[in-house]
Structure formats: structure tokens, C-alpha cells
Length: 103
Image (tube, rainbow, N blue to C red; front, side):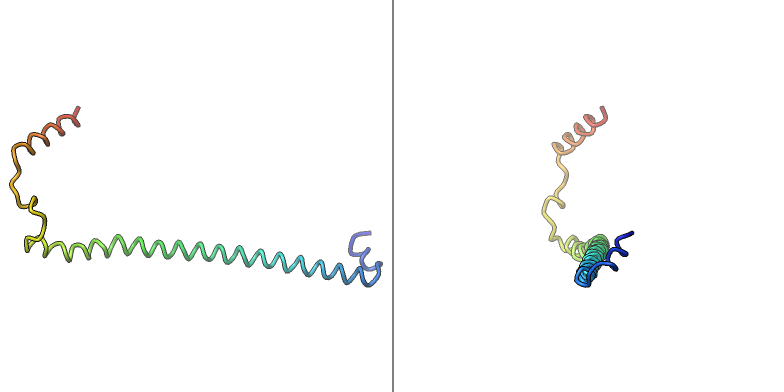
């Protein structure tokens, strides 16, 4: 005799309690499923949003910087050291660094 047959032969209160327990178990399973579906959808949405933000940063921010940097260079607003001649000391230091890295 399985559990379903036992319930049919039990009193009506036991059958009602069994149906109630079964309904509550089904609701709990459905609740867990909804939770995980919502969690997965939120994670997927976050990945999409992060991808869009990353593409925005890689494509548009350098473009915006370029739009402002080119006129700034042309008008001479960049730091003074960009326009200064290279000194002998700087040349020797760069040559020494290159020699050390070649070893």
C-alpha cells in the first residue's frame, strides 16, 4: 500500500491536511523557481548593461577626448614640456635605460 492509498483510507481530516501540505510544497517549489529565474534574469541584464557601458567607454570616451585634445594641442594649451627641446641629460638617461633593458 503506497502513501496515496493510505490517504484514501484515512479520515477526511488527514486527507485535507495531506492536500494542504502538498499545496504548500508546490507553492514553495514554485516560489524557489521564480526566485532563481529572477536572479538569472537580473544577472543577464547586468551583463548586458556592463557590456554596453564598456563599449561606450572604449568607443566614445576616446573620441570625446580626441575632440577636445586636438584643438588644445593646436592652440598651445598643452603643458609647456611638450614644446620644450629635448635636453642632453634626457637623451643620455634614455640611452642608459635602453641599454639596461637590452641586457
